Length: 377
Image (tube, rainbow, N blue to C red; front, side, top):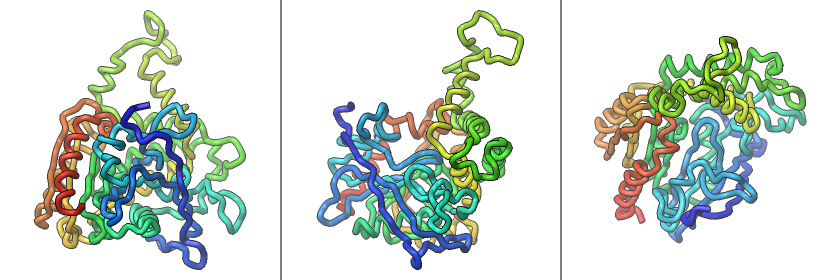
């Protein structure tokens, strides 16, 4: 275990939106009760002014740091959260909550519908980034925190951080967005639709009613294989695999796997099936596609009431959320005289850089948060 780890942690659960006080969703439906899985690291100070809310990416969960009992791996952002790390738990109280619609402890399509006693499946309503933020706001209220020192996240997590700053501008002093953008483009939507079709074309999907039966393993694995290609860059894949063969001297001239990259993608797909629900993947990708921060006007006017400081980080080799999209966001922030730092990190790791480029991000985030401390702690 890393000497600067937060150590052994446990997932906690927050219950809200009990009938008749269900959450009203953006799509018009109502949902409740709702369970939110979350974890915390560090200690909340007496003024409750040192809290940082971390948002996870598409297939992430609340376990961002530390270790679960008997686990083989630490939390997904363990290199960034802990004593002396970027999100220094000697100074900050860090919270990470699993999003609505997921299958990692929070209410989603695999959860039991109390009205039927069976899993929701496709009867679960389509949720938006706004709905996810509203639920997490209820969690923060439950914890007695009136203002967050920062909201932070990469990829989908960055979308949540952005939406929070617009919906609840008075509740956060700063926003850290990493490898993200302000709306999904046609290309991003197209990639997700191919992933969804891979799942829905699997006969075992059964219209989403596969719980307790054969799961759509082939479709979900294929969907993850497609997705994983978008998370890496051409250079990182070439450096890692090139045209290396799998334990053979020459290609087989058939349809068995010849190349290491083929074997790697199969492994990623098969392992994903073991830990994620296919319906949740459908719902969360649709949530991302519906996201458009400026859907009710232009992007500049969207930030007119925002007062938080911003740190915007992008990566040179990220072709899924390319740096120019972060630049568009920064222009809109500056047009509102918002304090914003915009940094592009030069790296070959593609979109996954926000999970692996720990040193570069740590320096930027530590400096950014230290500057904020003087004003808010």
